[in-house]
Image (cartoon, rainbow, N blue to C red; front, side, top):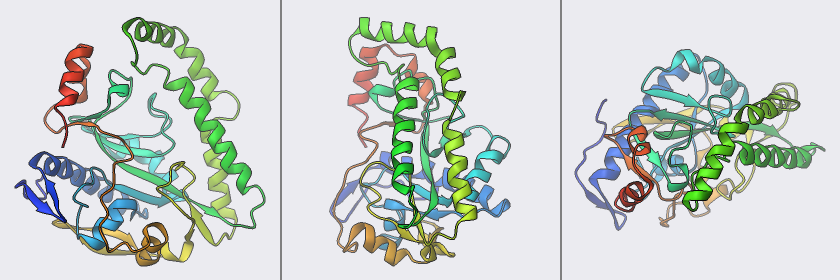
Length: 311
């Protein structure tokens, strides 16, 4: 694994950046370079997004208190990446989306399976939980699109339905409750999977969005997968007409040509640093051990490790 940045602790924008946080960033930069390589080889568009885009413009690297990397792709390229991912990425890299395992993510993540990034409610979950970078699809959108609101509501319904089914195995609560959940999940897993594939699956919904992107001349883009206020507004398609390479730590990162417009829409005066929190919550990060090592711990030992795991 290439070391992209110095691991020396430092203070930036009044925030103490630890060696451990830099080690996590290093893993994420390796994930990004792997993703970039696959996208370039297959002529797929990729753009920095969210805090990663803000960090590239304002800090020429990670925002000091950030702990992940975010990217977006036009829906057609995103769907192509999903198809080639099983052969394009090899161990320890694992491309995860709503069909690869029981995570039921409504967007994709690229994981390093030799590492750990998990929270207490994901302890012993049955899907990949290595350090990751996020990959979101951008879909075509128009205010004149009559079923646009219906599409958003349908997405919310499908997401909640399958997350209830497939997240049922989270090991939370008291021991008896945890045992009951695991027994029920084991017994009903085949039925849950069948329910997921029967009728209108989430993949069929994504195919519907892909069709909209390819057949309609919509003027805006929207990330339908985000249901939290990270994405505050629609985006102009012209802002993503091409990519520009901006410095990011000791490499460069592809950013949408209209990055200034995008950042102003989402952050306002984005040049003034405002410390935020991670949308993933507090995770146990370990760059040296795989998450499967933590699955072998008892609940008490895991929680003790989690309490000591802050970046």
